Length: 524
Image (cartoon, rainbow, N blue to C red):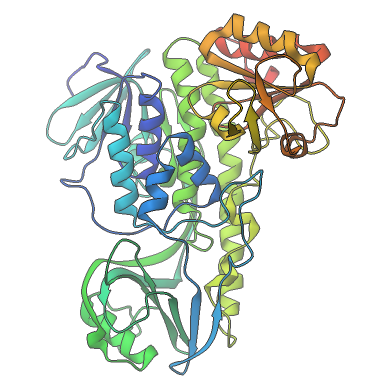
């Protein structure tokens, strides 16, 4: 592999949702980033069904959630059949609704190619475009750079490389990182995108019987496109038959009692085996792993793509601070420290949800709604154990928790606003609850400029926010009369909670991130 001087600050390998989210986050911070993919063209398959509630919050921060909401749809009710007859309609999100601290009540269904297209457009607005036909085949790390060799003989130099290249990640294999876990051959299904006629697109249709199942969910933004899932067809020897339009038609006719000719134009034909695997490391020197390259698991609960999105959002601000010299490279160790335990939890919860779902479909009226729980929204995940989460709490929150939303009013304009609008963008946010926080807010703005945006919440004459309905104090667990500072990280997790009388804690936290020290962040 020819030597190459660094030509970019960050090279991302893989242009799926994880890679695109990371590229968008870095590009909006004016980080020189390239994103490559081995595919010769952008996929037009649906694959993942869409973002959960926490991912919608990330997409809002990146400025694309309105496009996602317009292109997608809410999950439809599930219509369940036995012996070919409908026996129950279930909407697992019927009681879900937005709340002051969580603005998205339901997940959103959208074909993955549409989501990726929206993210590519957002990335293009920052002047960056995914480079197709660029397969990473070699990797060499130096003291201050990484060189990636491509299959066509070219090479790309970068200060850091992030492998977002899927469960079969070449980057992970080139690093020699173990991908530990298991593959369950008995739990298989065939999947694909199909065209189907004669079905009500207002429902997610699910046929279950003793011999298997067929499920068809309408793909938003299409007139007759459906996600197709079924237990595999098997030959006389019991071996699974490779997926095809013909096998899909036979499965459809067998389990639904309807003509197989209802299905046409099958695409993205694949056989899915339950894999539960996790990388034992997320960082090797200047190379990091994210998304399916770092973890794969059961599809129950729909956490695959969503976990990758959260990986990218956690890594983006840290990587940006390191490559610009604001932070010690040790900050990157906190990416693995925070996200690897989340991946381990995800493997556990998706395995448990799969077991529950498989049990449920054996009973009349049971179905895929058994996989949906409050745990799969992503809203309850945080990093309380992290070295970036020093001791500090309110009656409701601790450092490391997701920072909740709340409706407020802008003191300067008198217009309604939300905390998420204050958080949006590549900066820290300092909230000061009560008039006793005014001096600390002014000091943070004067010292850190645009890197920290400070907002007083009912902080007297200071410009900021009015908590008219008390939703902000309620969401953050700040009692009336208790002046409290809350520092929110760029990935919208709470970094620090402290009393207004200990305003130096904010500066100490930020200075520790901003100034290379060579000491471990675990001592923060």
